[in-house]
Image (cartoon, rainbow, N blue to C red; front, top):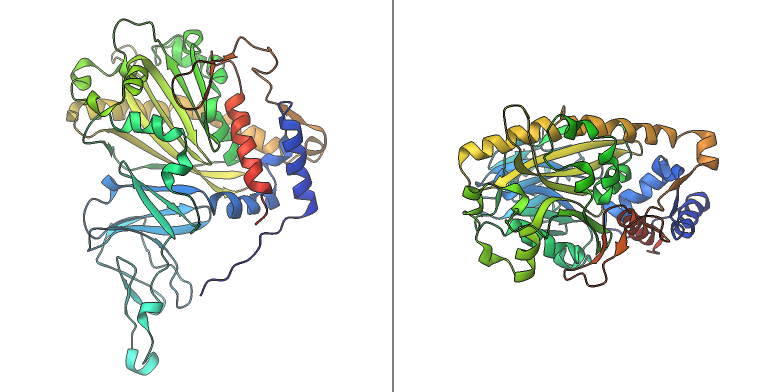
Length: 449
């Protein structure tokens, strides 16, 4: 039933990408890449259609029959917990006439029924009901007409990923060096993490690559765009002090950044209080992972292409409430070339007191929620850059600077004896992580099918 086809790209679009690839060696990018319809369509095929995409966390669908509706690019998928207890990622398209079978963004049901003609599917995707079967479809092989499954699905520490490419490497192989750092974060507690509340959803009129490169390692913008957060006491680490840390190219376009105090005599562990650290099973970590976690203050990263995360302590009310650490995980879903829908989850370790989870959730909502002080700051320049990328003259002449850290331009230097995976630079005054992301992006976009 499937048909292979080759992705074609015009010479104009290919020339834009090839020029960017040539200029990237000198730390230069083109603004036109951030608002181009043809490039957007190619991205849906070559990037989102082939990489691993985050779908849901198992704590969102804990019981049989639970489901949530999620997206890979412009395709909708029902992520279900079948009656067999297994997780299924099902394309939300009825194979009869192409209507959607999910009528809600989340729910609980043993079956999914198309509203058009009533074809009915079990929550594992099997077709089990066709109205007037004997008159309309006698002899139909129902086994051939169930809902379409995502070709690849993997569960990683409770985080459910899917790939539309049958030949994609395993998720862990795709994560490359990033897996070591995620293992460190997710393994601190035996019980792992759980979602706090519902994932927030909102739209930003921005190209997805701007958000992804920001979380890949743009710590530089904190010192100006987010200066007020430190001035009023939301963030406990002085912004110049916060730059004392490492940028890490973790392979395959993945990048992350740590603010670290390795000289501290006291364990930091992202500023979790002692009673929470006591719930950690540090034996889960290797000696090197323990060394890094012990000195970590802030961690931010981007899993290529569009999954970003952040662990840090912030206060929702600096005059009355001390900073509380939390973990935010978001997907920048590309709706259009100039618009993203943000799916924003907040997590906390499952075996922590209810009061601490509530404090972490409050801190997260006030800072990285829809109306959070960080979120509102970021949206302004992201939207402006996307709008400017559409300008006729700007597309012709504008080049963007990604040179920080190159050729001795900044104080940042490669750490030659970096003991952990990836290639690291210290301090965080450099844009090598962004260049790493774009280098991998261009390789994938220009790869022949």
